[in-house]
Length: 101
Image (cartoon, rainbow, N blue to C red; front, side, top):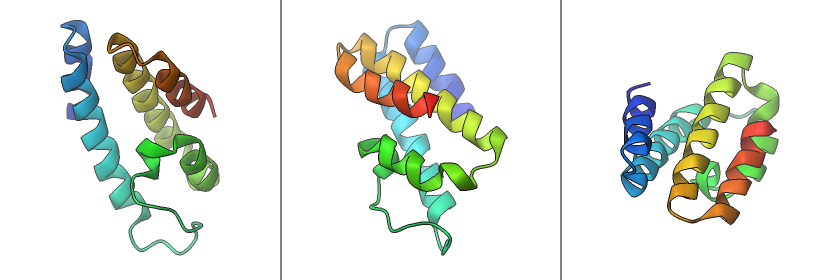
């Protein structure tokens, strides 16, 4: 929650790179804690949550609680807005697709 607030503040102040870093760090930490030691998930590579969000969502979407899925979608949407601010529209579309999955 704190990372989301800080990243939203970065978006509002047009500090897009800083905001992306905040979201990346939060999502990386969440992925690590969520996947650590789980045997009910297919094999994934570390940082799939950032590098291959479509694959990540396909792999974990079925086991996410609705509230957690909404939170992850919100982080992808926030990251997409920050990436758009950096001019990375093509990558932002990938994150929006993950948010909508």
